[in-house]
Image (tube, rainbow, N blue to C red; front, side, top):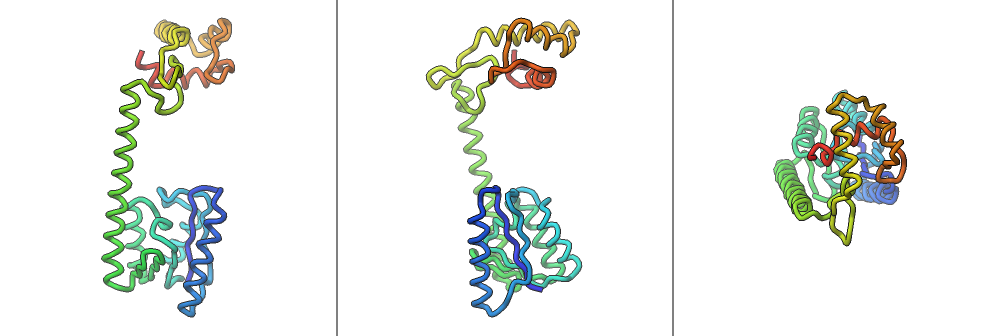
Length: 222
């Protein structure tokens, strides 16, 4: 059986689904073959192999029900080097051809197998470089008191810079003092609401939101 696998990372990419199907159908027409089934994971990241339709595909491969899988590009299969290589090994073990249209790869050829390994290695390297650059930028912003995410409790945004919010800092210190005295989250929640201390969104604290605040880095750094 010849099948196809299609994936998008978000649930707003119906156009991408249609484009992938159209690309695969044109390839099948050119080769004079037909994809009997489409396995489509809609709005699921390629960082994980735990995808419903992908799992069905792998199950059918291990049951020797599939001879060829067609995908538009390698990233649709997965974005993690080790996981993708493990999947490729399953294809090889069960003598299943993997056809990748964009990269012009087929597991049935030695050149295709070599090229796939090279592409996977380069793809992983690129992602690690991007991740490293992003972490570097975030670290710089944090060290220079610039906004690098949500404004943490105890801070406020003034002219693009994070500045101390004295009322919130006082509140955090008060919470820490009460906790050190063994006061419960329920007791502290009532204290905050009684003194009109609010969350960043302007709503009152409850026990769960207080616990989340206590465990946050901004609070622990005090």
